[in-house]
View 1 (cartoon, rainbow, N blue to C red):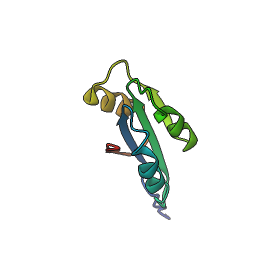
View 2: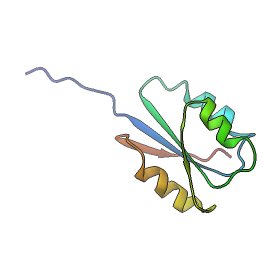
View 3: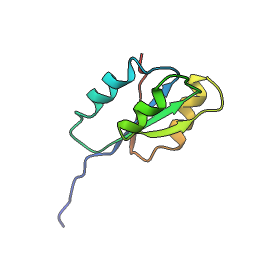
Length: 91
């Protein structure tokens, strides 16, 4: 029997609110990850360009009902498809 190893898919959950200044650098760094990667941005009502930046980088964008990092992280984890979840903050 031949056993084929696959690299676990990583989901990165990023809770945001008005992170347009810091988010591009973080997303550019994440694009360097050599394996399969899902980026989930959970935004809590940004009034800057945070959602636009998420879309430009091809991230999954989820909208939280209120600014609450714990609730945002839970929403991101619930909607992630990866074998592993990494929580990062843009700041």
